[in-house]
Image: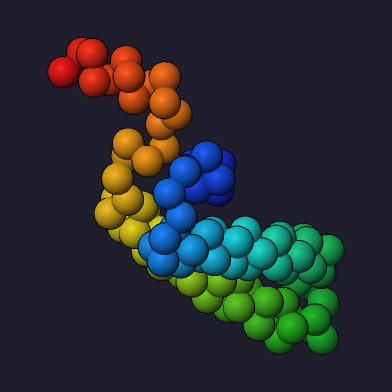
Length: 100
């Protein structure tokens, strides 16, 4: 939703670029997290030889979740600084101005 909102925005500035980079980074990191979850699901925790590896994947997955959360909070904070009118097309702006 954040990527769609950014793509529909008409005004591109430094905040827009920062948000776009952060959204793309968040998506890529979440794809990596999906791979880690796949490895965890396929692993056999009852096998003592695999336990250290699975514990590392588990800890790394927690770290990734924290990073994604921080990135998404930063994106939302930056997107609050963007003028909402820059997302509207000309017709929507006219309708908004008529109601004011």
